[in-house]
Every structure is written in structure tokens, then in C-alpha cells.
Amino acid sequence: MTVDAPQRGLVLVVEDEPAIAELVRLYLTRDGFGVHLERDGAAGLSAARRLRPVACVLDIALPGLAGTEICRRLREAGDWTPVLFLTARDDEVDRIIGLELGADDYVTKPFSPRELVARVRAVLRRTAGVPEGVERPRTVGPVTLDPTRRTVTVSGESVQLTSTEFDLLAHLMARPGRVFTREELLAGVWGYAAHSGTRTVDVHVAQVRAKLGGAAGVIRTHRGVGYAADG
Image (cartoon, rainbow, N blue to C red; front, side, top):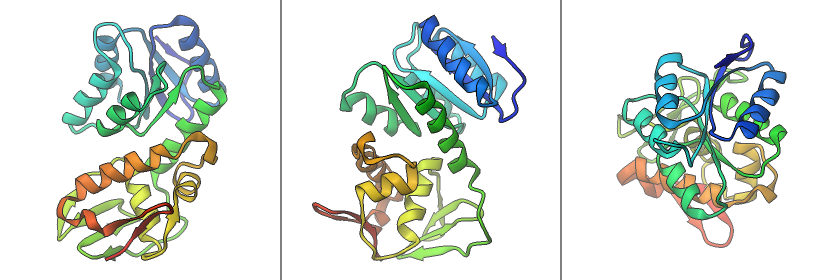
């Protein structure tokens, strides 16, 4: 079911609890988004492929097909539509599995609908990547990042990052050698207060390193402090 004409774009919400689905729909439409609701995983995957939404909000525990499986299948097909997970379990397993599959963010139930909308908007801002001005490519070691084109290469070979992973790497590479605390990265990249949990930063750093392969050492860990990009 699609609700309202999208001003900011269409968001796919796949949630099997009617009350939560309606609450999410209400707040997203108030913020100018169009919303398409689905209640099970198979229908959600079909809608994601058919409608090409600007973002997907996926419950992890869905009938038929889990939200993580929807995300995995989209990523395998080369679809990098931003994905935000809803999870009822506040543990590291869901968070790490979700982010490893290429999700951009997650919200733990119960959640503030206003925070959910803010996170959707933040993910879309990162995806849009609208620069304040033309920025030159940045190079640290074998890694080159182009902020305008939003591309990353390692020794000339293209690397596919999610929007969040790209912005994390860009933030670090903007000031090579500068050590950023987890709290600074959480605020600068995600736009959240520190109380939202800095574990998200560690998981994303691990994923960026994995994708950089042999160039993973460009992101250095400063134990007890944070991370820096250093050639």
C-alpha cells in the first residue's frame, strides 16, 4: 500500500506489526515522504525491486523472509538503496550482521518515530552526497577518494562502499593523520549524539577495512582513542 505523493521520495517500510507500521508511516508522511507499506519479507523484496524507493526501512524479524535476507539479496543484485533496520533485540548480533550485509543504520525497538525519521533523512543526505563546493580527490596511500563523484579506488581498482561507509572514510581522509574519537565520528558522520552508541563506528570501520583489502591499514586504530587515516 502506497500512501501520499512523495515530496522527498518514496520510502519502503516492511513491518509486520500494524501499529508500528502505521506509526512509521504517519511520521514519514508528515515529513514529506511517500510511504509504501508491506507486511512480509517476500512482498517487501518484490516491492523494493519494483518501486525503486529512495530508502528501505526493514524489520529484521519478518514472516517468510527476514529483513537481513532482503538486504542481502538487494546487495547481491547490485542494489545499494539505503537500508535502515528495525530490531527488537538490543544485542550486537543483529547490529553486526545487519551492517555486514550492507545496511546503513539500525534502530532498536521501542524507538522514537522522530529519531527514525531523522535517521532516514541523515542516510539520504549521505547518499545524495551534495558537496558544498567542488572538492578535489583525496589520496592516502593506495586509496583515492573522490568526494564529488563519490568513488573510491585502491591502486586504481574501484571499491564499492555504502553511503555511510563512504562518508566515514571521507571524514577520516579529509584530515590524514588526525585521530578522530568514536564520539567525533558518530557526530560528524552519523549526526548523532554519543549516547546513541559508538559500537556502530567500530562495525563500520571493520567493514570499510574489509572492502579495502590490502589497503586496510590506511585506517589505523589508536587504542583507547579512535581512528585515523594514515598512509
